[in-house]
Length: 443
Image 1 (cartoon, rainbow, N blue to C red):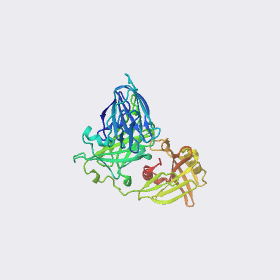
Image 2: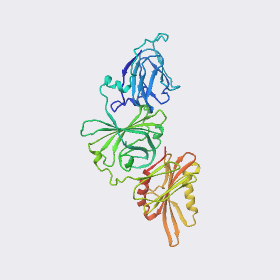
Image 3: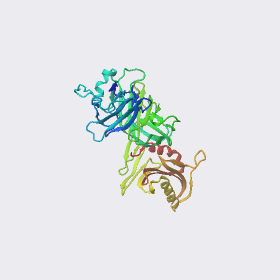
Image 4: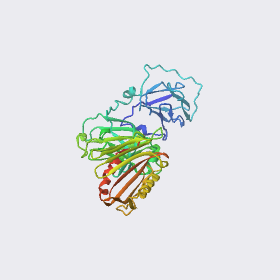
């Protein structure tokens, strides 16, 4: 028979959801259509924990009657110890082709031995309902009506770039605690549609915003950094420091682990001084305006220092132009260039060179003496070129920034272009980078 060990709702005190099979422990994820893993072999004495990682309530049923049916709400878990060798089969009630199997080795179990009938339970027990009697009172996690907004940006906390991965299914919670210097604990959980291994390929950082309407207010950040050295593996998860930003009074940590769908599950934990929410955390707290590409779904957040100069969509292309009175920044999402950002940049430079009013074209040099060209796999390619432009009244030096960002692999890119008088270019770098920090690609 199976021995019941614990029946606990996941809470801040129980990070068990991050466990994989280690030693004599095994975690099985209940998904909407089955289990992960669905078949596994373990030794006698292994503690198995089922966790509902799906999006709806499920009922776990033993095919052979080894345990009573158990109802799992989302994120509920159940632990049992396998004390006898044999094959244990289970499934999700009412879900076709959802069978799972645990083969337990060591010792002998008579599979023909009838299973003793157990008293029926009415109603069917739920993991949440039995928690208090088995483990004491459950921690009260109050859902937050308007959860924090979180993104994975290219770049670091100090030098962040565009939003490359958004959180999906984000849900916020708040612990009910007595007031003290730390204040309540906040929890934000969600998933990013990127394999965890890909987050070590170049600089990425997790940024936490006050909320969706105040995305210009950054309250905490964690640099992901490079891949940890062996013997660490992704299955063990990764914990990062969330550091305070913009004097928010909030800090904590971020926990990352591979998700069952091939992405990265992320949990963000925040503690802060009581009343930190009432402290101004940004000089400009005016909520930004957001443009969303009708064709490709990317979003651009901009504040009231920018005016819309052009907004045109058609023939599979979206063109959106902003001006602050000194420079124009043009965003054009379109198919072409085989979806290759470098081809896109090269094409803009070729067009610039071919303009009969343009002369003296040359790549700009940065303060470190290096050419202002480059890029990454996530953010695409960029280049900065100086040139002279011939007007009727005379020649004026100009500086062109062009960056091309992948939208659809091998198919489409987003071109970001800023052209301004060279004398004004340095002062326009900050405003342009502010727009790029507010750019979120569609997932």
